[in-house]
Length: 296
Image (cartoon, rainbow, N blue to C red; front, side):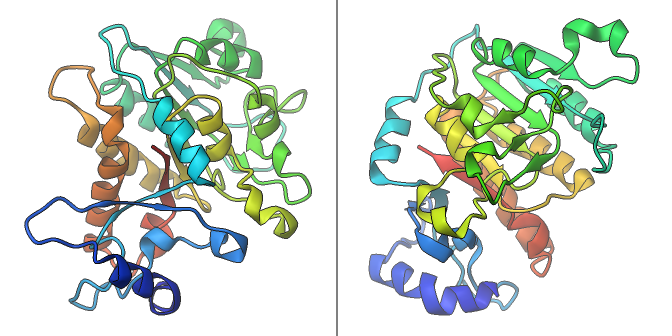
């Protein structure tokens, strides 16, 4: 499918733009897609594993954006890093009241990125919530911490609502009473926000065919709420695989100083991680092609 996507859609665009220059960093490319094309991973289009560079990954660093105006908004939201930047990690190794499977690697992922994020606060689902009430990831607690966080990382189940995309969301501790949805983020403005990483399924998916041009999904909602950079996923992500991707991503963002990251390199950092994963397993696109960057 990725080869077909290159042949019918990506190659004419890449050739027309003549993006590649030997010896120079790969250029940035923003995909503002509409209709059914918006459901496809254009950043991963190409003939992978065939010994040539007929791939988008080898010619450009891709990002997604709903409109040119949204790109301008994301760029205006870019903020310089400070020594007081804080981070929020939300981990849901189990989800009460659902039939969704557990995420046994969630706490492992949280522990690894705690070492890489500045001043992290971790909220986590526990089998003994009474002992960790102040750390239980309820919607209200998460929203409260979001206002003070430059970096936010969610490790949980996500879902896409085909009937009402504004009700697509993340499943937290109290999801049976209220959900962290696209709608609940609408109108929220986060003055300190720099990067949101949604390590959950379907966070960049809008499955309502009548609203494909609206880009109503969680990744877009976090961007409009004030995060100039958002990492999301087109489809379900392997729990164990996500740990390695997240850790590699934050290491690629590191400035070399303990706890200091450069969020403005988010697109290039993710591109490096995805390209490395592709080089190792070019035919395992169901894993590495799911990840995308949206925003500035």
